[in-house]
Image 1 (cartoon, rainbow, N blue to C red):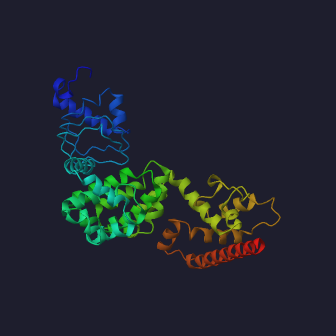
Image 2 (spheres, rainbow, N blue to C red):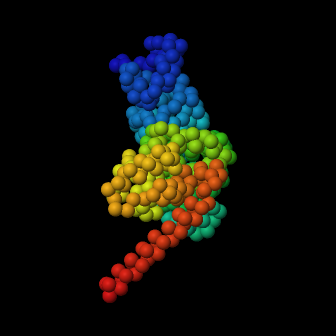
Image 3 (cartoon, one colour):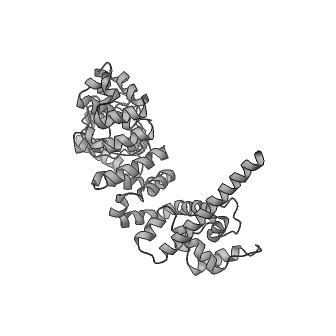
Amino acid sequence: MKNDVILSEIYPDKEVRGALQKITSLDEDFATIADAIGLEKEHDFQQSNLRKVDFSYSDLRGFNFAGADLTQSYGLDILIDETTTFVGATLAGSVFEKQVREQDFFRSHGKAARLYEMLKSGDTYDVSQWISSRSGYLGTMQLKDLSEDDAAVLCQKLITDEIDLTKRTTLFYHLKDFTHSQRELYSIVSDFVAFHLDNPSVIRSFVKVAGDLLSKDPFVAKTILKLCTHRDDSVREVAFSAVSYTPLFVRNFEGVCKLFFADQNRHIRKKFILETAAKLSNSHVLSVNTVGENRNADPENVLDFDEMLRERGIIKVHASQKHRQSQQSSREILERQQEVLVVTPVIGKILERRGVEWVDDAKSRSSARYDDFYRYLATKIDNGFKRSR
């Protein structure tokens, strides 16, 4: 709109609600659809009813939500900054609540920024000790006089920032100690995931720790499982790999299996299989590869899980080795495939959980091959040192 009025001034409230419902029902992110239908982010969302709206993947920089009702709005991978306005907005239970609360806290507390920097850049052990007990070396300094509420705000901000893994893990373990309600806990989890989707190692640590400590919480479980459906392959890959080591995997076994074996994760499964085979030996790569060549193998040429251990797949692999002097027998291919699958991320856990009869034998063989490989490496390194003397 070019005349700086808001929608409710020129359209009946019923029509405005209908337009916003249309935005949230289409298969695109909120910001993209709003732009496509001609709504202006600077004006048209003031005083709007945006309760329980999914803002996933939206770039909300420059949006003005002044006076809007964003209660329980949610989403992953949301981009906001200081140009996103929430003045007078209702944010209860929304993905934006925590960040706006932090901004207000830092504006009203003169020393807050300096205290926060102490936590962010301070010694890992001292900071972890302070998080755990609010005592220790850091407790004798300015942080000692912080109220529990103020300390909670700093901890809540710290967990979504770029900090080392030890501090982050300590924060995860004490998550409930510095959240005063289920709503605050959910807000932190949502914010953390939203701001770290581009950092696989951080997402992996979150899934492992939260999936262990908070696996019984329906919201946390839903958040982690949603990562397994993320549109980015790298996020799904990390989420699947990490969740398989947590109680959440057992509690949601069939659901995780269904997600993992979906067509969109075919490339992830084949990548897991190839990487595992490469760690075992060249002959293991050959046993899962359909082009015969075991150097620079591509996941696209690797058998998927449902193709392995089957006669048709074994024949395909065997045929690809026709130009090799020493072809693998069908039995060798089958055994190598079993050895790969039992130690492949997620797949190995699924086979173990389902009680497949050959799992234990294949595990023993895989373990022996790992031992042989590491002995070979140790000998090679040792010989290298001897030659360099």
